Amino acid sequence: MADSPGRLSERLVHDGRIVRLSVDTVRFPDGSTGELEMIRHRGAAAILPFLDPPGHPDPRVLLVRQYRYAADGYIYEVPAGVRDPEDPDWETCAHRELEEETGKRAGSLRKLTRIYTTPGFTDEVIHLFAAWDLQDGEVARDDDEFMEVEVFSFSRALEMVRSGEMVDGKSIATILFADRFLVTDLSSGEDAPGTEP
View 1: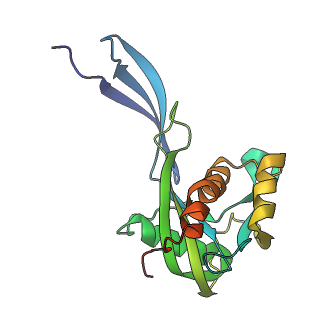
View 2: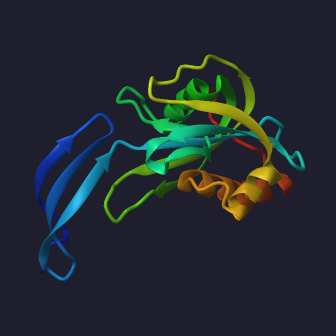
C-alpha cells in the first residue's frame, strides 16, 4: 500500500501575528514528492448582521467599509475577524468580532457554512454566520483597523455583489449563501435558530 499523501517536512520562513509561512515537502497522491509554499492561519468568523427580524421582505444589514492595504483602498465587507486562542468555539469568535467592529451584540446567531479562502496556498477557513436581535455594545477595533459601519437593504447588498462593487470573497460568499439558503428557509416558515450570547 502506498504511503498517504501529506506533509513530510516543514521549513519555517516566517511566523507572524496573523500567519505562519513555510515551505513544505509534500507527498502527492501519486506517490511523487515536491515543495509547496504554505500559509497557515488560525481561522476567522464572518457575520452578516440583520437589523430587521427574520421574514422581513427586504431586511436591512450592516456592512463595514474598511481600508485594506492589500486591496489598495477601501472595500465593503461583512464584519469579520480572526479567532483568539482563548475562544472556546467559532460562535464566541463571531459574537466578539461583530461587537468589536460594529458596536452591536447579537441576540441570536446562526451558523451558515465554512469556506476555505484560497486552498492553493493557505489552510485559512472562515466560518460564516448570520446575526439578529442586535443590541448596543461597545466598539473595540485594533489600531490598524480603519472602518465605517453602514446600513444597506439586503437587496442593495446583493446588487453590490452583482455589479462588482463588492469584491471581498468572504462577504460575497456570506451574502449569496444567505440569499440562496437562509432567506429561502425563513420564507418557508423555518425558524432562525441560533446560539445565545
